[in-house]
Image (tube, rainbow, N blue to C red; front, side):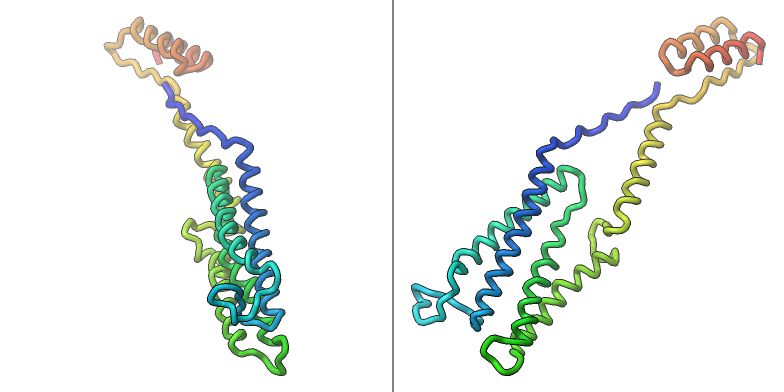
Length: 226
């Protein structure tokens, strides 16, 4: 009898909705963080605060005080949701993109306001140093992953689909090979009992180990003594 393989049940369709919500929410929170940073730097400030011990500090632009923490913590939650949904659906997670997206987008702000700071005649070298660091921290891992050297799972955008297709085809071929029994090959000797061989052949046919054509061919060869 051939072996059987039970396929895992597919993920419910609503996991796709959760994946979309996680990705969209992560992008929205990163955009909110990016805009909040621009609001502070666009006001000519390197830091801001108000109330409590920050009474004498520079006041933050309107809305920045609540946008910054929300964009960070809620964004992490959406990112975790997207990672879990992608894993449940058996898809390659794009959570690794959050790191280069964060540092490259914020680094763009450092570049812009470092080269052309508000209220200054020359570049702000402190912000330019930050821009260089953020570019390296975001661009380096991105280039490594795209080159196929930085992903722990070996995934690259250009090779994931062909590799997955070849693995699926190989798995399907193995399952078919395991489920298909070898054809019946009677090799009677001098002392073999013809009736016993025919009974064993009929038993294999009833159990489904051989089909009708194989049964008829094997029976004919037994009767002919081959």
